[in-house]
Image 1 (cartoon, rainbow, N blue to C red):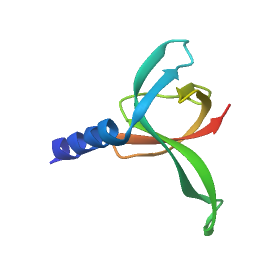
Image 2 (image 1 turned 180 degrees about the vertical axis):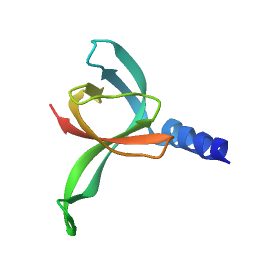
Image 3 (image 1 turned 135 degrees about the vertical axis):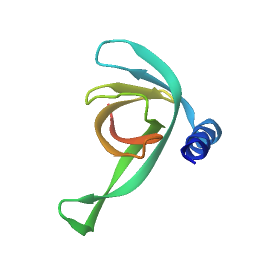
Image 4 (image 1 turned 30 degrees about the vertical axis):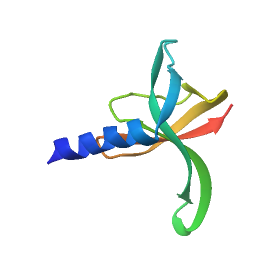
Length: 97
C-alpha cells in the first residue's frame, strides 16, 4: 500500500512541480522537482491564529537544513524549517532571500 502513496506523490511532483535548484550547506547542488506554494499554518499554541508562509514540497528523501537555498524561477529562497513529512513528501518553510 505504501508503494501506491509513494508513486502518487512522485506523480504529483512530476505533474505540478517545477524545476528547483537546491544548494546545500556543504555547497553541493541538487536539481530536483518541487512545489512552491503559500499555506496557512498555526502561529503559537492557538489554532485560531494563523499566518501565511511560503512552502516548498519535495521528496522526503532529500535532506534539507536551515540555511540551505532554493532557486526557482529566478527567485532565491532560504530554507527555515520542516513543517511536515509524511515519509513521501516533506514540506519546508522557506523565505525569499
